Amino acid sequence: ELNARIPILVRTQDETYYEKLQKAGATEVVPETLEASLIMASQLLSVLGMPVSRIVRRIQKLRNDNYNTLRHYFQEDVHSDIEKPDESRKRLMSVALHKGASAIGKTLEELELEKSGVTVESNRRNEDVMHTPLPGTQLKEGDVLVLFGTPEDLEHAEAILLNG
Image 1 (tube, rainbow, N blue to C red):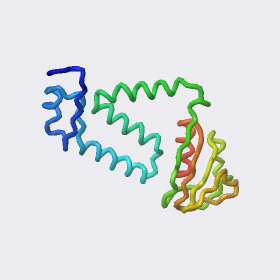
Image 2 (cartoon, rainbow, N blue to C red):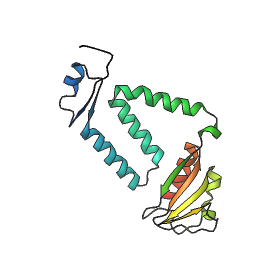
Image 3 (tube, rainbow, N blue to C red):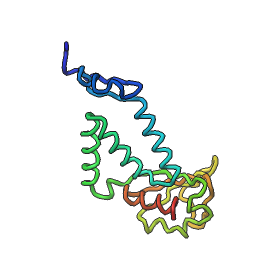
Image 4 (cartoon, helix red, strand yellow):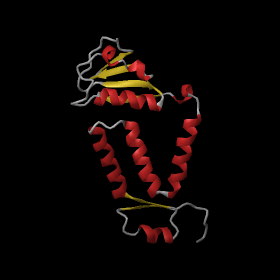
């Protein structure tokens, strides 16, 4: 009431008083159970082999549907990135090869990830890091590959590594 320009963020245990807090003037109400659920869902989808970029999009959509303040940020961020040329959109992404990943036992050459538009920058295996691994490198469970490419190309390469 003293200053309507001051944002008021409220963390709650659950959504019990969500509407009451918003009506009382809260700029944003963040229920801990919602955030915990989103994190659990993200982990589950990752373990099931869903590409990270798809998980991020789904979680962002859920947050957009629940948080008014964040809704505008995420929409602007997604649209502005798509407008940029491919070279400026390229980024690094790591992909962990968990048990059951399709790429386990295959070589980088067999996977032909460069045809997906990505390069393999490194492979971390236990404590060792192989920078620019050779095409004949056979992948093992627990390897963590660092890929470089556009978000779409990275999603495609991740799907190849995890699901074939």
